[in-house]
Length: 447
Image 1: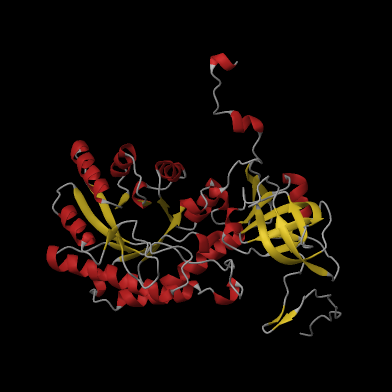
Image 2 (image 1 turned 180 degrees about the vertical axis):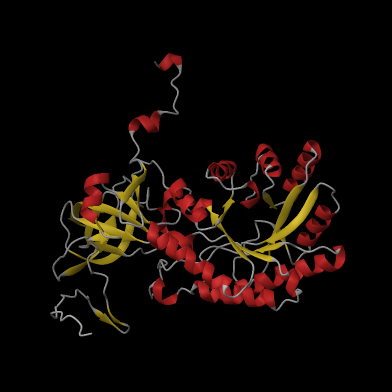
């Protein structure tokens, strides 16, 4: 069938200066997110506003699961609540089949409230209260023990309520990446981890079902996961030999990086960050070659967060003003800063204008609105000349910004989810003064 003729078009490119890697393409405007105009989002929900793409979240999750399940027969993801615990976000991951991984009592209660079965909640972290542990035991949740004091507390609670606790230990070890994350869990090299395993195995109310590690955050070393998986396998096989029992699962934690660009990096993250496929290959091949019987392969659990949601999040904001600094640099003040864009301390986020602009660009400092000198969104970025009320779009902000944000000087903005059909839903209202003051109490003598 003859294809329909389409007229050729010419698109103006704002490529910026050449370097040895080619031309820059950071200046292409972003006028819409998942088909919804940026201007419409601001008109309806205010500026600044966080925007999440349900389509991208589901796409990321499905691709990551596929990377592991095509290489290993038993895989389970557990959504990292601390990465973004808005209920709408958590519900999407749970609909896709993810368990919940939590690190505090309130996160544990959120997971239960989101309909996650108790035995599908992994409870991590060094600060589990007695009431949290009791609830986790009664709900048959998986409790990952961080230190000996916590182990003794779990033993006493399990004995008191006369119920068996399903537990794992967090293990730390040398994976060739420094500094070693040895403040969490039991050390492998000095025998702490094996000592903890022995203590658990000798208690009638504790059942050791798993081994867990989380070797770091934004990890760029694929080989480190290979080493970690190998050492967890070694512990599991030793446990099988000495106690004649199988470890049910190995939890390799999270830490996989998004494609954000770390501060100080010469090349963008999209060109340098390892893919989930590479991490999956390193981890699964190590477990498959470790020496387990095929019928006794442990379940592989991943607690990924950042890599699943970072690039599904955007922050839309407005220009407040422009000025010249004393050294001649151009500076632009925005209506958002490090109060809600905490990750600007770590990343040089890609930032796009929301409309067609001229070809002229200039090196610019982007400041937030806070009365603090450290409120810098980007220390240096080439941008077109901006005017008051112009809109900007910050990319890849879905991880941690909506859990680590703060009410300093400015209150926290609305969060919007664009669904699979391109409809925008407000999933968190912008804060008000009434909300800010609702927990305050005024002493009588000050009234």
